[in-house]
Length: 346
Image 1: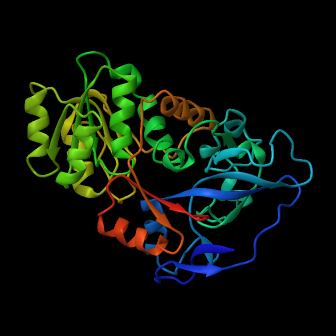
Image 2: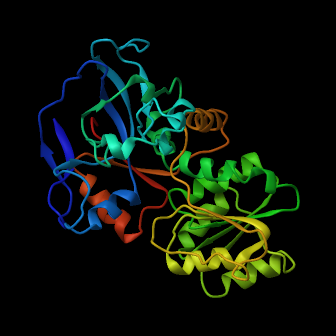
């Protein structure tokens, strides 16, 4: 079968032929319908050889959807041909966090060397993939897998971040979304669907700001040295009650802190390496700073229900398997407007 693999430190990913896997007891084989492309993959491929945490070659893709092709011994509750999506942050299934469905915060994953698909385990940008347990599959039903597959990360991650700030996003409040690309343009939609807050979008790209306006942002400004002042002016000098940074580099994190109001939530989702000083006098009183990771299994089901009801819709660009390296090139160049999706089986 064809698969997109990262094979050598510092090299570009390439499409290769590898054996089609067979499911072991407890596993599920998926015929992959769609696989999302994410900035996290680029981050992985930028890590130096020293301390690189995964074995190479690595089949990429941590956003996956497909049809059930085969079941390993002992697997029940799934039908051959059923359309499903993959819940990516795999855990042990037994610790207190996993028992609550929060496998994204599994307490034993590192100890047991459990890794998400595409981020340590063989991923979804392949004609077939192995899913380690049926509990990591969510039925898609009537949802289009191509449109829905980005929601397994680009939907779930902002949903998880926003859900924890819902009590602060009351009528008259303001939420700021920094970075309105793959995750950020979904965050705008989640905020509009679930809160009464005024939504302000910040980005360095006019194209992405236009996308943010199209999906519901009340205001959209260039993310530059004047952005914080514009948000403060818009809010009468008070600032925003919730700020979600989907970039996470030093300038955006600084902006996030600068626009926060008293008792605000600042949530740094992007993995750009920026940090925000926290301490008395560094930020307005009682500001909470969070750095969440992905989301829970039940939240993914909730995200799919939002999509089923038409509240959120991911802007996607599709690529064939042979075009997958080009998708990563364009993502790295910042020319993907929304989310890139690979179609491994055409």
